[in-house]
Amino acid sequence: MPIRVLPPEVAAQIAAGEVVERPVSVVKELLENAIDADADDIAIDVLQGGRRLVRVRDDGCGIVAAEAELAFQRHATSKIESAEDLYRVRTLGFRGEALASIAAVSRLTLSTRAAGEEVGTLLRLEGGRVVQRELQARPVGTTVQVENLFFNTPARLKFLRADATEAGHIARLVSSYALAYPSKRILLQHNEREVLRTTGTGQLFDVLVTLYGLDVAEEMVEIPEQREGEMRLSGYVGLPSLHRSNSQELIFFVNRRWIQDRSLAYAVREAYHALLPQNRYPVAIVSVELPPEEVDVNIHPTKQEVRFRHARAVFTLVQRAVRSTLMGRHPFSVVQIPAGGTTWREERRHLPPLTPEQARLGLEAQRTGDISPGWGRIAPTEEEAAERLPMLRVIGQIAQTYIVAEGPGGLYLIDQHAAHERIRYETLKEQRARRQVASQELLDPVPVELSPQQAILLEEHLTTLADFGLEVIPFGGTTFLVKRVPASLAGEDIPAALIEMLDAALEDGRPDFSWEEQALITLSCHTAVRAGQTLAIEEMRDLVRQLERSALPHSCPHGRPTVMHMSHAQIAQQFARR
Image (cartoon, rainbow, N blue to C red):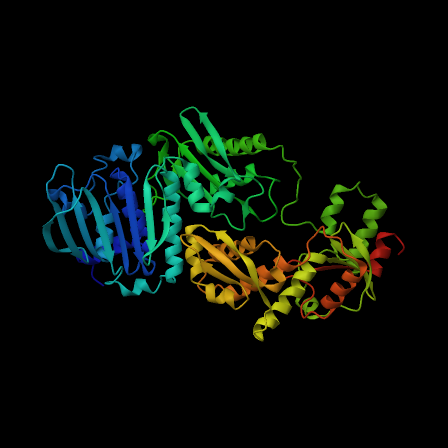
């Protein structure tokens, strides 16, 4: 095949693929341009998750008429002049690729007027080519309207997710920049419905209240400004009582640029070491400022990844600042929990060392198969999962968490919460299949404050939740009212259950994510008896009887074991009786 030079329009579409991956990429570039233009008011309108329309209006400095077309030329920028400037970037944008890339894959309209000019300029482009130019009366500032994204590259439309998913990405981006620039008034609307509006007071706490609600904001602690040489750090961190099922609320800014950085995320999680439940994540907004020459932002087309000149110093500053803030706020007790769960054999490491005879007996038993390496295995085998439990005789309860029972096969230790969770899961699943989920209307509807991203997602799945007896209605902005709940959920923490479902969906992100399955799991968990709850002997017997009838009694819906079994041979082996 001969070598040939690609046509300009094809080259432009290929280059656009590096910058414009999905609608949120368009919003990001236009929002950053508005911030760089020193705008105080920024309004973002989105239709159909951004594929139909993205419009960003600002009251910034505008573009002079003579440079309107030039703004859409590749590598045309007002933010740097030489290669040396790449190592001291002080603006969010600098590549000169955004407008050209967006215009190449959309129908774009630019309306702008620079300060000092009497009239504005209107420019229309289609597939990167100017098709109309005229004068226009308008205030100082810029409006960029992007319609029919990827209209000339339809194959790329197939890779976009549902409108709610795309809109959720946009909401998360805009929310993050609202946190970075609390002095700017930012409005986000999706399908003509207001999702986010900040007041521009300049106080980060006010933005936290807008995004998360007052209850959550009051559980966050301001980080006293920390300095290390020319580095400065500020922000807010959540108390250990405030945690999430995913890491999406770990938000980082470097010189007020929103970035993704695994190292900084790890630094924050290490600062919370032993303060959070297992597999839970903190909420933190951390802003680092340092000289531009100390950080390289020119390593990825999306500019969301950076490279620090002294990465270890930044890591240490973040970890120390977060940890000292937490410990200064409240003298938390620290409990060391082994990572990844603990089997019975691992627990023995904390006991006095075995004698040589004990060690010999243990190794011999493992070789002969009389005792497993650890009788508390993390998950049962397929054969075990297929077997129902034998009839068990309840003996009692230990640590108000585990039920001790005896059966024909030996001793059984049952996690009361995990076991009840499995029972509730199968019951709810059967009730939903028969459309017989008992529900109860609340005398006083319960308000739930969500993030913009959560609100968009919830609005798309209200019908699914109604099938489970959970009736939720919009109440304006990102507030929803819970009017009806499953009868088994009455008196429980309803907002927590709802937010857990949304967080699981956001964390998963797959197009085949099952809302029905997640609702079953979450409702089962929140209606099951708790660890630490004292049960009467009759309650324990009833729970065990129901578990015996369960189809999959060996694990809860989350995959954790419900039962640990120690055979008579294993018990005898441990007491050196054989």
